[in-house]
Image 1 (cartoon, rainbow, N blue to C red):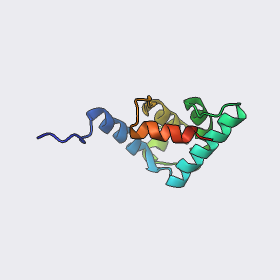
Image 2: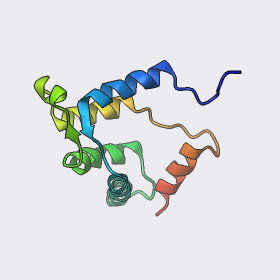
Image 3: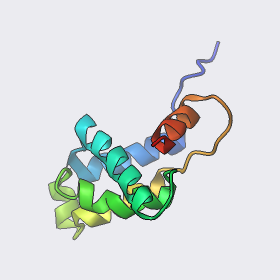
Image 4: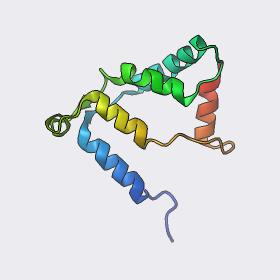
Length: 112
C-alpha cells in the first residue's frame, strides 16, 4: 500500500535548491512578524484583507537579516535578497479550496 504523505519529486527539488543556499532559516517569530507586518501593510493600503502582494511587499525587509546564506550561495554571487526572491518564485500561492489547512491559515491572516 502506497503512503499518501510521500513527498513529490518537485517538492524535493525545491527543498534541495533552498537547502544548498540557506544555512539558517527564519524562525517561528519571523513568520509571526511576517503575518503582522503584512496585515499592517494591507491596512495602510486601505484593505482589511491580506493579499499575496502585501506579503511580498514586506518579505525582503523582514527576512533579510533573519536568513543566513551558505558559503556555496555566497561563492556563486547570491545575496540574501536573491535567495528571498528564489523562495518567492518557488513557493506556490495557495488557492482557496474549502476548509483545508492552507485556506484556514489564509483566512486567519485576513482577519483584522
